[in-house]
Image (cartoon, rainbow, N blue to C red; front, side, top):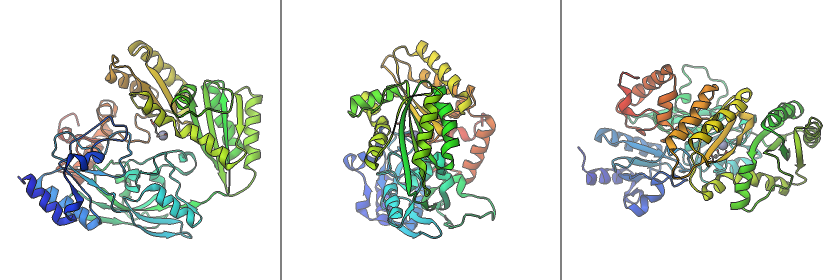
Length: 470
Ligand code: 2HG
Ligand code: ZN
């Protein structure tokens, strides 16, 4: 058994003493999640500067039986990068590994270290007239490694896919301290298993992503943004079908925002929609290298009015107005946090069942948590809603989670669409996942991390790996 002093001095030997943080003050930013609802107690925080240092730390911790919680920008919404409260887990922050190793504007790829800030990579790509098509509200702090570990989604999934669809290659440090180098810049690569997929969305439980090759796209020269209010969810869904027809593959975002969400934004961020309200709002964006988008968006609006789906709408006249419309959507999370405590549910349900899901969940919540508020918004085009419940202290939080997730499963949906299971949804996943999913997950975890060194307690608690249930 390694003493704490031995561990700290061995870690200092790898990264240098100033990059091993031990005081409560220094470790605090790494110990609490963005929402400030989960706080852990790390043994220390270690900040390596290279893949070789990450590998050496993993070997050291493995030999000493000390578990590791990998962390990127700490912007996650499910506490997947926060240690437990035992004071025995080492947080391994990748925030010193920020190098953009290469950017190829013709091959349309960027190779980058895991700790690079998403926005910095997007800006670098933009400076060469290319776009990294991962757009999330936290891009100013989120890192490439964190985005990969959670398979982040965001605002443009409709057009470009999830992080999984944009990742071409990975470099990963495995639990035994070896390095798997798959930094290939290839669109086509069927040689053997596509092992990078095992690590994307694995929340640091199977290996530590240290670098990646990501796909770039051309910068759309034209874009159009519109905000519409609609008469019902059914109207919103019909309008989505219409927009897909009119705008086609250039439709890059189709976001749903409830009137309640915009009420929160108006109260806490003092921003108001410039149109007459309905129960729901739609923020629509089209982006293309070809012109004609504005006509197409106006066609969507006109068709929406004609069919009685749309109550009011505006197509942005300028870049500045488009940004104002987007600000309404982008402030929802912050406004919710300012309003008070909430239970986040990051769900996806196919559009054909969405109405029934909302009805079932709301009916059950009215009984179980009377007076709870709802903040529902998200990526309607992907069937992914953030169904966030603004609960009161007397409400049973576990019961609320069960109600929402039971309704999701009843309608064939997923309880974790784009934020990961983290710590918040592990119990619910174990309760609701098909046994065969758990068995496969357990097989993979046992093969890649047999001693449960990496991010224990996330996705598949180690204590459950060898039980009969799995
Ligand atoms: C978004 O879509 C993010 O804005 C955050 O995924 C969702 O705050 C949330 O629940
Ligand atoms: Zn989202």
